[in-house]
Amino acid sequence: MVVVIVEYRIDRRSGVPAFQQIVQQTKQALRLGVLVPGDRLPTAKEVAETSTVNPNTTLKAYRELEREGLVEPRPGQGTFVRRTLGRPETGTDSPLYAELVAWVSKAAGAGLELEDVAALVASALEKQYTAGNVPVTGFMTTGPAGATTTRSTGE
Image (cartoon, rainbow, N blue to C red; front, side, top):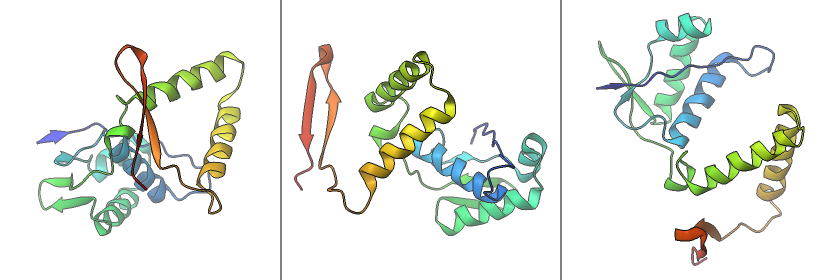
């Protein structure tokens, strides 16, 4: 059994309920490969101690994740990850992640603050993923010696 230390950061000013923030942060960890099938989530008591939320808030979040088929409770043992949301290209060891980290570093070096970067990213995401846009059917990867390869998904 693997216990992954997940620290939930609850932003009480965001307007998003704490249980929903726990759900979102767990899904993000699943997408990034931080959490994988078989990992045990922290107990409601552990989350309450580190995030200052009521244990029932965590239990509500875990029930939501269970309804979505992402986790499963095991009586007397804890709550375990059933499946991941991650794909190879979304992991923190992917070339896309490295490019994003480099871009964020460049933005910070240009004097942009966190909120500026978040606004730019949100705007780019909205532009790319709005209903009127044609989906991207290929992706770029960086191969050996920095060579760039484009692969089509055949759509």
